[in-house]
Length: 349
Ligand SMILES: Cc1ncc(COP(=O)(O)O)c(C=O)c1O
Image (tube, rainbow, N blue to C red; front, top):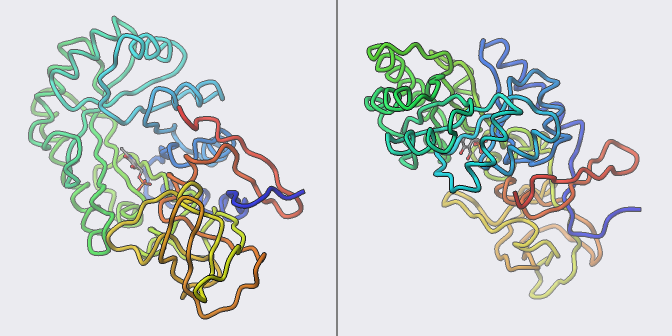
């Protein structure tokens, strides 16, 4: 029995291939992989990443950390400089007791607040460095100020991390990796001058991954998330190919209005992201010239030269797979015959 469309289908052979390929390349480059689990939110996929040699999992929220801790993951990096409220502080202390937990900080005040929230519970800290995305993180030259304050507040400093998110543009996938390496190199020198020897220097995004692995420099680990599935953004950035895309949204052709093909996979299934460089609201896996030109909650309008009879089923590649997964309760894992339901256990967490 197949689920009704729209649903998210995982090609397990491609998923495993994506995991293994990156694990092998990282091993050859001498760096660890700490995959960002916000992409899949799914314990079954985390298990496969850890079995392939991942050092631990990166998460974005306390809720994700709790779900993966419940699934038996022992090493977690909460890579967001959170400002815990009292309830979150209590949850962090519980997590600190049951896992080896690292937390991001990017300010002196944040370090003091985190230390107060932890009240002696043991977590280690990575100071976030801005390598060019200009989201969170301090300039590499200010790393020591935050690290010294955190150490003074009783936190254990493990090192520094950066997210080279400015890799999400056709011209910067490689230069972002160069920025990542130089920011982390500067962070090492700043930390050493303050008498702190970093053991972890963490980088990584999916578009910059290939370049980071080719020249890791001081980087000790990388945290790609999207690499596990690939999506239309990575396809259009030249960072995956359709034959490696491991997650699609199965959709049905429901209308031919205006000579176009209308699918039942709207923004509530695909997510609504459309980057400035995107050619549309997703891609059709087996029809590379097709364009999804219009998206509403329950409709995707496709322009294509091919003919798709009403009722036919197509595989849509979401633009940004993390957001599509975040809209689903279940991923349907296709191993060949039959589908297995994998709960997106950290959804809503
Ligand atoms: C801090 C951090 N690390 C790693 C990642 C993973 O990068 P990507 O989504 O390009 O795979 C992200 C993604 O947003 C992130 O915010």
